[in-house]
Length: 312
Image (cartoon, rainbow, N blue to C red):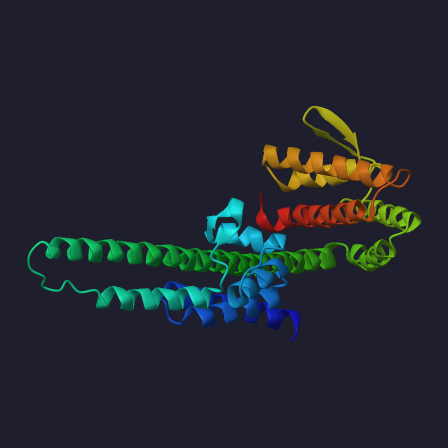
């Protein structure tokens, strides 16, 4: 089963289970089996073990067993280890038996002084049965509630994950299209960054960061070639010669958008990124941080190029 097919299967299984629980479509044993399958597919080991207790019974030796004894409301007296240790099916069978027992209680016509005593005894017995039914029903409700929470969590996690991937893939595709049109050489440098970062060695990370800086420089040359002219931005005169890569990118941004807040945000982002990929060459940077820096550079380039299309 491919990752995509597995994810789709998990989502469908979650939908089925939520309907099964909310609409009482199947019995508790079937719910436990379906939930166990979901726990296995989603890699939820703790839930999987808990569901085993619900199907086979609890014990007093495992911490996880004791944890879910509490969460499902099974304790009678926790200090003395007295509780309802049996599986869910046993408790639900007990509920049905108690309900039948309650139905059989009849108030026989008894005359004289005995009538009050018999009626009183039957009422007391009925109250005890009702209390027991309530106890076991509470356990059943808690178990189903925990399963519902687990299934809902997995469902929304998968839905959000798929949505996030879809959004990112769509945005990535648009960035690649923009880069291809404006500066194809930038795209050509990306595979070498992935290769170096996958190596994981400090020297490889340093090379990857150097490539990130060169990508920014190459990007500047593509969108705003070196010029002997200068530009005034916010009262500052910026030179646009070959060595002033950040100035030339900022000049491009200044021309492409009228939004002061966006100009400021992009200018600050560029300054931070350029400083980090430059200093990172000479200082220790983790692989994860280097990957994050590359991703930020990539998204920044895409946002700058998108200014022309959006007419900001």
